[in-house]
Structures are given as C-alpha cells and as structure tokens.
Image 1 (cartoon, rainbow, N blue to C red):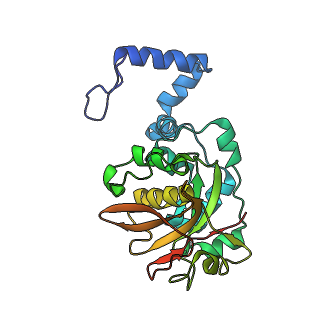
Image 2 (image 1 turned 120 degrees about the vertical axis):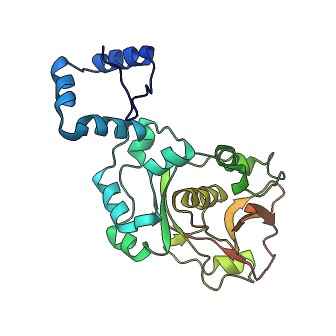
Image 3 (image 1 turned 90 degrees about the vertical axis):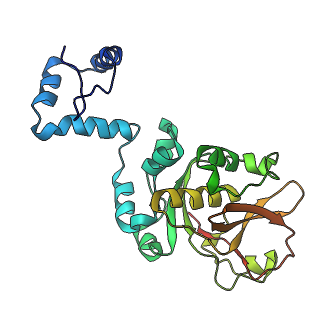
Length: 257
C-alpha cells in the first residue's frame, strides 16, 4: 500500500491510522470506483475538499448562512469559527437550529458595520475561559463559584451591537433600559463574553476596549453583571447595583429575532 505523505515526503499518519481510515470510508460507502475518482481528480481537488470538510467538523454552510457571511463580512462568527476557535463539535440538532439566519437581509445590511452576527453555542463563561488563552481574561476569581458564570445559554444566532447604546453611560439600569428600542434587547453576560472573545479570536479586533456594558445577567448577590475594558490585561467580568452610574459604563444591546 502506498504511504500517505505530506508535501515534504514525511508521513503525517501512522500505518494503523491509514488502515482504520480506509476501513471507515469503506463502511461509509467508499468503493474502488469512488477511490479512483479521488485519485484522478484534477489538482487533487476531491481529496482537498474531503480534508476541508473534516477540518470543518463535517459542517457545510447553508445558503442562508453563506448569504449572511457575504453581507456581514468580518462581522460574522459562524459555526466554522466556533469549531475553529472554541473547539465546538456541533450536534445535528444544533446544526439544524442554526441552519437559517433569523434576521432578514435588510436587517443584516443595516447592521453589517455596527453589529456582529454570531452563532452562539451553549458554552458558559467559565467554559469559554477554559478553552482560550488565559491572557484573554483578566485574573478574576470572584465568579468561579457563581451560577451565572456556569449558565451555558442555548444554541442560537445573535446580532450583537459592537458599541454601547448611544448616550447610555452615566445612567443607572432603569435609565439605560429606557433607551433600548422595541426591536432590541439586552443580551446575557454569556452571549456578550462569547461574542467579544470569539470576535477577537477571528479578527483581532477588541470590542469594548475602553468601556464596560451592562448585561441582563444578575449575580447571586443581586448585582447586575457588566463586561468590558477588554485591553491587554484581558476581559473584565464585573458586577454592581442597578443604581450605579459611571462615565465608562453603558449598556449592551442586540437585535430581537
């Protein structure tokens, strides 16, 4: 049997893996005819497509997802990005739940420069922190035992604003809520942390680098969570009473479905 080799003629898989790989393909329906098509494909095109599909965890984007990526550009964090940067292994149910973008093309066109369209998987703040470079989070231990930090949320698309709601700083929670439009809502801390860290990993852009934003999540002591100041010291996850005001504390927002 001819050995599978890399472009530098060094083996990248063992003989055992090679044998098991072919067995798996044969069980899945690989025939001699199909194998020959791979061998004969121009520019090794078919084999390259198989490898790319494996790299994506077997995921193939839907027409809806492709169109959303075209519109949003770098402000798109989809299933492929979640697989690459968070090590997500989507279930069939999760892939199905994300198959259609819940926002119209008109909404996406208006939001393409101001929002991030993100496929959020059920990963808690603590799980996200454990999956990425520790330097992306400020060294905080207060929320290690907090149930809100273990809240995994659910699989869904979110269209999250890249900036605080206009004129929302130096206001308390009730005053900030009054600024939220009918078509918008305040996302959870889990969604905001997922979006901020994911977007940075995919684009190197730091959202909320010099400001904090309140979320809809509340800690066990009854104080509301806010996140931000995502500079070289890492992302901060903090909390305070709803009547607290600060010139560097606004409120986050995301479009409703």
